[in-house]
Image (cartoon, rainbow, N blue to C red; front, side, top):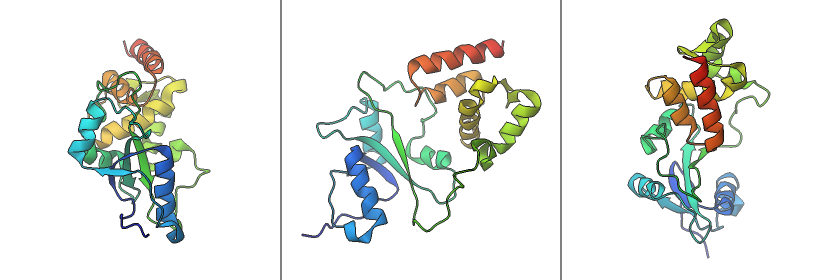
Length: 196
């Protein structure tokens, strides 16, 4: 029996890790397009309701995944269309909550990808911020110790692309989406101390 389900495309899905592996294999290999996973496409409203209820894995181990096409537009800008509040502190998290996983989808395996040998500070969205940090020890007016600049520069680039204010609080709020609470507390303490 042939699967009639369309291939993975940009949008929200409820799926497990194994579902994701099957779906990515279907995209990359035409001979595997008849494989079926338990992935379920969701509307933005459905996905945000699921997230706001905690993004707890269901009985099949499925949680939210946001698939975004890697087509040259900044993924942080695309994400805003699907999750407008993603820089805000995740008040929806509860014990057992999973982070929202973003899956960059490359249209074809033959397309050029970012040089895996290139340093993160040479990536276009953070290169100018890295240069600013090297010259001043600050990024967008926030003093950042060297040990934390990787986290902070990428976050500032994402906040800037979203048109958000760059403050210690906005950086920490955005980092809290994907870092453990103890890591967030550590970065908050360091940034607050450096920016008194």
